[in-house]
Image (tube, rainbow, N blue to C red; front, side, top):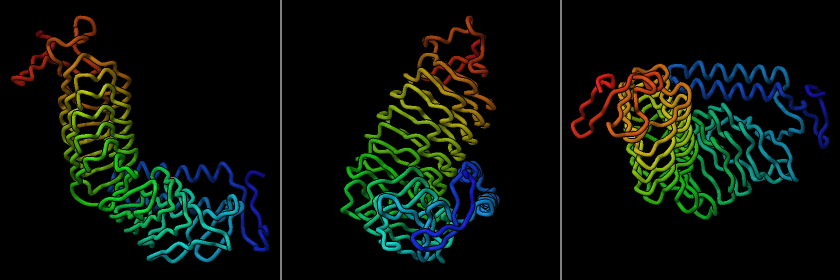
Length: 381
């Protein structure tokens, strides 16, 4: 019964349907995986589109284009939850879309995950005041989408909801929204202390407002036109995946107020050439700088005591990693596929080469004198 396909009557309306199965969920996860993985290389963008379309075609050929309990009214497919409609798929012609407040007599309160996935003909979306929730990746891969307007009623937005593509340059929020606010097309929490969503199509440099203390998870992910970020003096946290796949980002200077840099925070930032980890940071999470192909030099702050899995793996241009503090613990593969030399201060603890040899994480070590920028091979110490 888990994969049953059939024709059923729902509220007097005949519609195709199926029981959602693991296979469909697998197809959706495969689409997500292909999309995320292939975004790492812009040369594969066309192949990426073909792969997502192929997976969708396979899914629809197996199960049809409507799920269990899915209704259709006009340009929308939707499901009923607690007497209200959640849009599961837009099937209209595109262009500037104003979503209706009711479908089939039911109040529209939500957008389901992947509801607008891969719909390239939509250029703008105005969401009605009845909607309270946008599920994760609701507007995923809407490559033609340039503008989204959020009403005051939306109080819940899932992660990656606006990973729509490089055309989205602005997200507008109604000023009466009790949870979210907007400045210059960028979405923040109401207080302005957490930056939540940066439009992927916004171009050039960006100055983070002084009110911001937290860069949210996934907030800048995939912003290929972002070239430089100026941080406010109060930022303390860089969220998980915050700048992942910002391929043109070349200049990042974190303030010393930063205490946390999240998992994959700068993963696949191919234009990043140097980086200084602030002294207040105590741990680098896994894959923080993985696949930063142009990264040449890194300075690790005084208090970093632990470095996670493959933090600098595949950073093929990496030549110098300078440690200002004691030797940290390392997880596996931290410096895999790099040519880095590890530099440490003469009086730092844990760098005794008589105990563990003349390599650290599989890379050669040398003594560093920051005042003169002189280095000495550890074997000659």
